[in-house]
Length: 242
Image: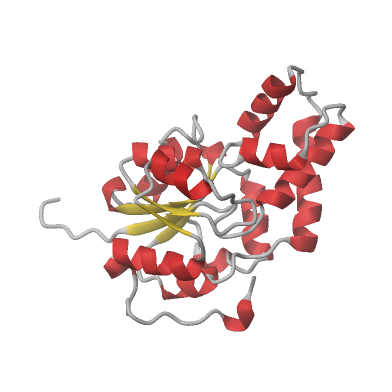
């Protein structure tokens, strides 16, 4: 509608952005694959899988090993992952202060299964910031790097894609968000990031890249000044949640 003012929105990836989960998830999947007779190193698996749905990860593993992945593997991955998450998963340092300070709608758009996203956010105490604005690649026909998930999130949040900033740690997610017409802030503060990660995200289309949430909130403020009620002052993270 002409003259209507639409708030911008910030859409976060979950794994590697809100929670430091990529190494744990790769360990769990590597164990399950080894038990199925498909040994693959957790580090190799982690860099093969970042940003992709479980279905696409297993397809990539099968192609990499030139073996068919047994039908029992997909159902075994989440229980193994949940066990590691329950013991070791942590929120990204500094993220809660950013979430508390944001004054625009926020959501999650993740390639993970809905139950994994819900568990991760609840385990780290971040779930209440997002309410029902949590979206999984299982909700759309094509996952990242297609734009479908981001467009679905924007539609459900009633915001225009061009008004959204997406925060991503993966090339696949960055490509998908850019294809949806959204700006991307790359994040390389997770335990899985390498020295090359920032360059890869920029090459995929990220407008800026942050190595921590201290740098991330400054970059987000520069990209979207109205995102914060008081853009010059953000609360500190209580107790150094990490």
